[in-house]
Amino acid sequence: MFSRYLVRNCQTKVMMFLNKTENCVRERVEGAALTNPNMCITADQDIFIDRSYLTPGPKKVAIITGGGSGHEPFPSGYIGEGMLAAGVPGAIFTSPPTDVILSAIKAVGHNNEKGVLVVSYNYTGDRINFGLGLEKCKAAGMKVEMFVVGEDCAFTKVEGTAGRRGLVGGLFVFKIAGAMAYNGASLEDILATCEEVAHAYGTLGVAASGCIIPGREEPLFEVDKGILEMGLGLHGEAGCLSIPFGSSREVADKMLTHMTLPNSESRLDLKKGEKVAIIINNLGSVTQIELNVFTKDVITLLRERGVKPVRVYVGSLITSLNMKGLQISILRLTNSKWLPLLDAPTSASAWPKPLIPEEGHELTIEYAKLPSHSEDTKEKMSTKGLMLEGDKAKLFEQCVKFAIQDVVQHEKELNQLDSKCGDGDCGSTLYRGLTGISKVLDKQPFQCPSVVISGFADVALQTMGGASGGLYSLFLIGIANKLQERFDGDPVKRWSEALRKGIESMIKYGKANRGDRTMLDALLPATEALEKCIGQEMTCGQILTKMADAAEAGCEATRHMKAKAGRASYCRPEDVNDVDAGARAVALCLRGLAKGLLL
Image (cartoon, rainbow, N blue to C red; front, top):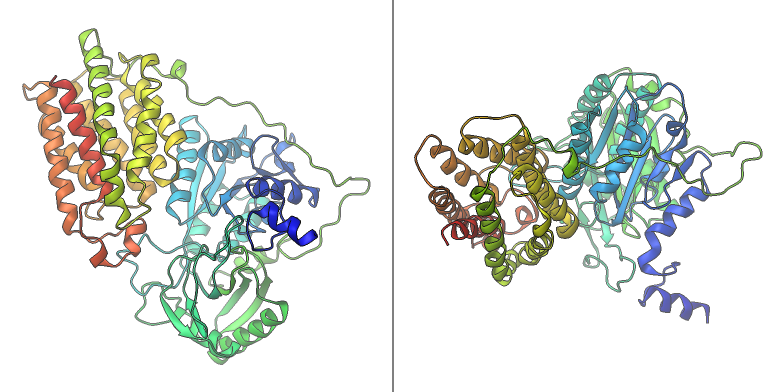
């Protein structure tokens, strides 16, 4: 009877000790709070906070991080004095929403003159959503910086991929940076140390099977019997190669050999005689005896290579649900200050050390009372920037409305293009964003473009989701911020500057650029076409037509480009043989705007 109860509530044949699948993340958040008296959560958002940051008194640099759930004990296990000030878990294997990230930054950064360091893992959704939250806080006058963890040693050639993924080695960053913050270091010094650590550590993983997401029956990926997948990501993203299953020592030897390949762009340059710290991470379902045997072999093999392990951290530190796999992370202790920082005390529960509640403290959930904060609103937007009068404002409204009606008809076409190298939802995602915008058009003050476009950015973020929603929102916020600045010159020049600002934001957090086969390959030519129109006697319709022509030419050029960003960068080149869906979407939007002006 009990077994049937579990099956029925999980809606799957796989046994999981859950209640309702859709509630598992929130219930996990509350369960973690019940066991840690030093940590509190928020009542209406999934945020973990070190409660010392919510009490009056001198502040220290606050370090926050986050990412998809399913990697427990990350991030809650690393909240505490000497490590993280706050952590934001998203849905299973999904980046947390920007508005929750924003709340977390403000919770620990409010009236904190020392500032906030946001640590993001090098996954597109995390970079974009954490970056967007950071930029909003910067715009509000907060002192906040970002460091991106990316230390995997999987790929011998990093160029042409979305970059080195962030893995369990990020814990070295949390511990060292957290100890520095606790000791009163400045934000600038902590960030500089993180950058130094980035050149001294590396991680590699192996797995015998994929994990099973709550509510599903099949694992994310399968590995043939007798085979291990080496170099995979935390969610099961493709590894660098398959290797035969062997003894613990044989597997450890192959991993260390790959991590230190002389011709690998992601290699770890271990030197004889140097000291290292090691993390042996259980990705989910490796037994303790296997962990101990594997740890012994890793230490032995490093010593045989002349390397001196002086600290070893072993356990389920950042998991991938129930994946059968292991990771090795190695930090070269090239700076003599790092070891004392690793050894410094912390109240974080997952940095192995028992947590003892204060006498008389009950194990109850403590809800944080956050300082109130307001989002950027239309009322706060200044009218000192670019303004449109009379017929020009009506024309702006007309072309936006027509473009939306025109572009949404291409949903299936964009989905088909995207299905060849992505999720197959580019058209559906854009459709959600445009229909969301259409619902608020009648309330927009079209005489003030910065207000309108800022509103569109918020709608895109709320309705589109994922990396696409974040990218469009970053682009539109960049445009709106530039249009808001004081200006009394050529409006064509200001629009071109605004587009450039939006593109810079996309490049900064999306990590793509021209030639990487993305929407930028249409946006950049269109912006250059606009810049050529500065000082020319042309109508708005003529200008937009030139921009649309340039975007379409740029889109067509992506047909022959190798994908170097996003999911497509991991696909076989022969499978990526049509135009990029994102670039096509940009071209369609610009053509729709041009048609709207030429009615």
